[in-house]
Length: 516
Ligand code: NOJ
Image (cartoon, rainbow, N blue to C red; front, side, top):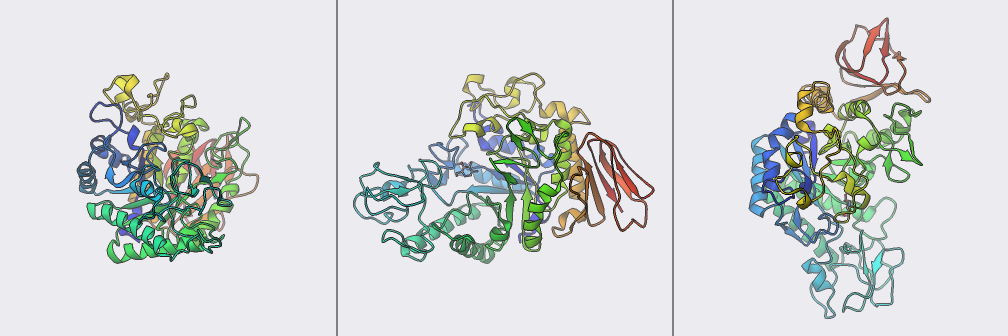
């Protein structure tokens, strides 16, 4: 486990929308460099940056055309290296986004692979042996290439799947994982990783980490084998490089070699229980004041993954990401404070999506941009201050990557810095507690103290710290057993909380941290 992960708190940057330093309407590496001190002061000491490679941007850069070259709009490879250096100079770390499962249909490998005559890239992607032969159960495209075959997709139509083989090949066109062509794909992936690690990046967030081997079994035996091989390379040559998987199955991802896995907290239609459970117009997100839910709905699932993996790796909570609706669409400022206080005092490395620290709003009316669709509304420019374009860019507003939210009372960093009760200042305060107390750097010390069916308030412990939360609109009391031998000291509260006669009294919508 890289040492720096012990107390790492990540800030996710969607580079298009963070900070434009050259006035062309889109964010860039230099813009990020200019805001590193802000990120550090917020309490985040690590960054995950979404794909920044050369791409036709049909899926916001998750359609990579050249893995070893940055997209011009963000800057050059040298500029990115300068970003790495500036990050490190501040004692911070940065993960790039690795897209191992597919490339853009414009990647040179795919162009070669599509040719009629056989060449060294013919089997870099998954093709059937005949234009009429569709691969059962796999998304695919027919009729677009001179090659006589149908190719498999990993996500959008623009993203052909790289060939890591089939767990149990059944058709003549299906390769086994140890076919030379599939070994070559694996080696190409390792080569890309080494390329950026040698330039100074600190590891990768891995896109669709479970998607490599086709017709894999329930335990993802084939895909896990590949990740273990890759982890071996890191352990041997880059022991301080970190890997986090977009997988949401820590019991598979962590033994497979990931240091961290995201808890994406999916329920049903892609919304999540803690912050974004919105169905048929009804807001039942756990931190919504009027929700009727118990934290057990979340814990039952989360704790299964956590307990099985806590000694080996980190199961990480997120405020949101570039694929989710912003939590502010379902939770108001007070509710967000409680949600973040919870997230940031839990085990794993928290991931804060840019703008969530000020409660940036979800822009539901936007037309899709770069394959974003409903995700587009969570990808708008960062709101820094009340100058032109909220300080994001000096370009004319029509030239911006996406419109800045200029609706009345739009949140900005500058305004919230001045308000001691702002969401931004609550984020800073909680992250400071996390940073300064060793108990929050020990991954395996979570104990649930109080969590009941049909009750809203709950309590948990990390070392000497007790956290209590009451997301409801009514006061609640919590008694924990065994009783405490001394009076706990309250070190932080949102709302009002008190300890008297062995009971914790939690005011409506409150959260408190106690030290014993
Ligand atoms: C997951 C990424 O987070 C998402 O933005 C992307 O569209 C797909 N994977 C495909 O790469």
